[in-house]
Length: 175
Image (cartoon, rainbow, N blue to C red; front, side, top):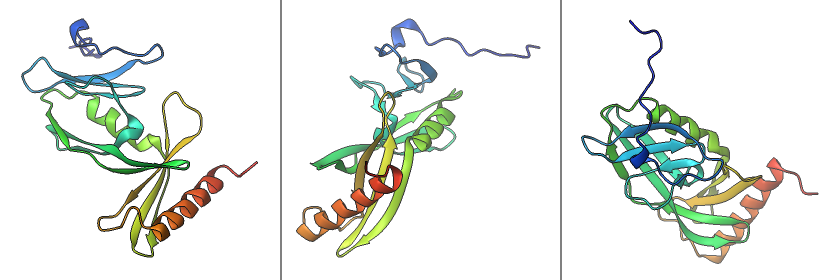
């Protein structure tokens, strides 16, 4: 009986084009195919994707015990000092031998969130989020409006600008 079992290394033909400081943390084959999902210190490489999905770019990740469901964030608008995000299409992967991958995904996505608050607006509501981005100093600021909230109404934009400003000041006081 072996006390320490090592998982096989990621096959060279499945290795994504990693950045200089990027390293593989966990990986899993998808179903019975040769496709793999690879978690690195910078993000998640998904089958068929040309680039990794940064941990800060994942809105939701769920593990059912067999399936990993990823909801990426999509940028709807760029505003002064923050982005407006919505949920992208959910992608699901059947992982028959997941190993450490689901735990790494949960840990890394959770760790990327440094600040989050939910606020009621004059019409609707918004979540303000400050996230850590691997390889960058400071936080990346974004908002996600609740369903039915008008994204481009002047009073909504003004209130959101104030909320993001207050959030930034609460994390790092102005100079």
